Length: 336
Image 1: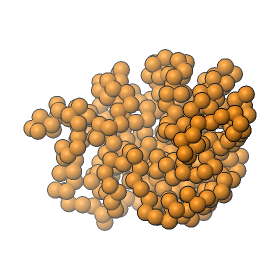
Image 2: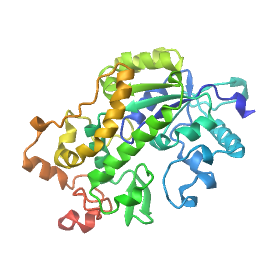
Image 3: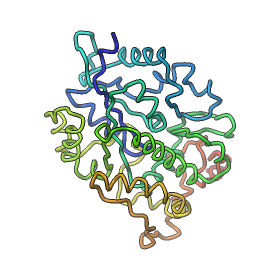
Image 4: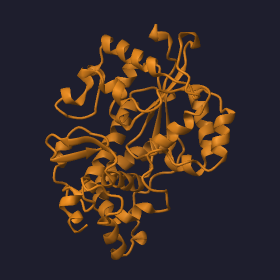
């Protein structure tokens, strides 16, 4: 029976572009963990009742009311059928209960639902500094590589990444407003859901710690997950971490400054969410996110303007980087 297959699944939670793919790719090298090879979109949304097309395109959110016994067994069975170990070998009944690793940013809006499907799951909450995170979300929109809903009904164009509740209220807003909304909705939903769970069932992780101190960070994480910090993980963490498969451009210090003016516009709106995150960081003894705006880092106007309308790597059908919500080919791409 599929009930005997899963033992304390490990579910990564984060806002889009927070580094969850990097964390997933690191942990998936563990000899103790099994995955379905990628993200769970097809498994979850393959169920008609959970598919966004059957839900008026309202959002990716799922909660306890969306759960029922039939779905419970169906989802667990589908996850089981796709389980692979780190060597790509499929699961078989004789393997007994295994530790399953799962991640997709959509799960940020589905914690309560996932807790019903996997009532013994452990959750890893990955937090990234908001200026960096929101800038990366903006970059993802501009790249045209992360279009989750082409020609989303009611939007007037393609939608990228996570679809939170009340997204329709953003129509006509600048790109930075959309990116900030996605970041806030994901983090607030995660924190609200985790607050209902016992402390021992979730762990907070800083993206900066993951990048700067991978060995110590993953060692601590394996302790929480109750898995060995095996040789494969140690070797990976001893070297420079590879870029994740979804990296848009190579990491660089203060890369977010290309979106300095845009993010400054929405910075005041982020303060309540930052305060919520800081309270959790305090709980785990981690440094706070700085709420003050760094005026000393302001780049020259020529740098920010050039970055805003740069056409490098932008699909003609992607949203224009200027934030107009027009397609690039109908806006700054006209002169291309």
